[in-house]
Image 1 (tube, one colour):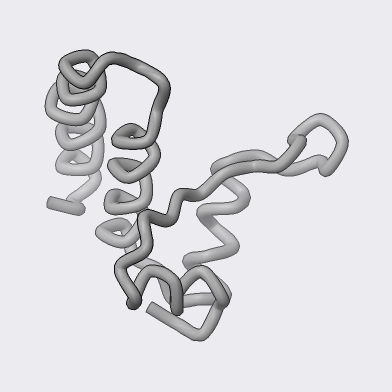
Image 2 (cartoon, rainbow, N blue to C red):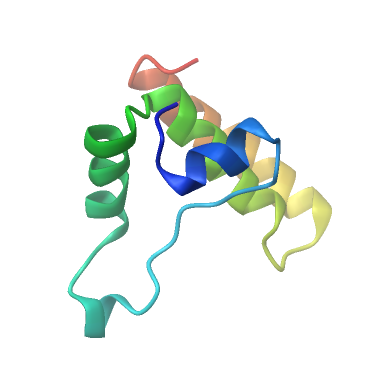
Length: 84
């Protein structure tokens, strides 16, 4: 993980997530933010998988629903991209 500020927090094992602030006003998307981290901070698909799982762990859903989405959607999706 590169020198971007989020990288330091990740190395310190904070539960960081990747988000858009206000995508309609800022003209960004989650895909664009992920691409910027890959380009500017040397993040890999494995790093992006980690923050995606972190985001779901922090979601306002019951635990069993969060776990199901992680196990049935997020992990298989990233595995299909080669980021096991």
